[in-house]
Image 1 (cartoon, rainbow, N blue to C red):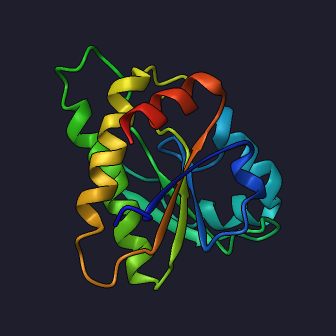
Image 2 (tube, one colour):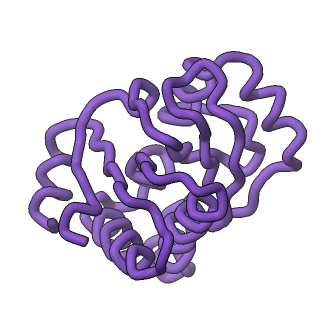
Amino acid sequence: MNNLIELTSGDITRLDVDAIVNAANNSLLGGGGVDGAIHRAAGPELLAECRTLGGCETGTAKITKGYALPARHVIHTVGPVWHGGNGGEQELLASCYRQSLLLAKQHALRTVAFPAISCGVYGYPLQAAAQVAIRSVREFATDPGSVEKVYLVCFGDEMLEVYHGLL
């Protein structure tokens, strides 16, 4: 289990893994940040498939093909907007990781890369979000047949330091 999580930095859209996770909005139709970058890199087919999914509720996840991405699939999950921590944000964020990993398991995917869900415009504090991410991934890893490698993709040195300190 010690080798389950690997930290990496850079552009999640360039990773050759079974699935990358998209920190999406409820519409699944693209947006800013990592969501926009994934849609741009995957090409218009991703948007076309996302239009058929009927959106996605916060804390849940849906899967699509990866299209022009090196990743074979995109798992779209909608993280919570930070409202001070008393609105169920921690449980919703943990659910994003669990639901994404469950989809990966159901589709027999072995390698999954996550961005820091909810840490951009949704305002989730990085340290708190990183703790939820690592705990959720480790808890799911005890499930037989689960993914073999989870990449936590850090955007910037501060994020890398926070994750590194927690691992």
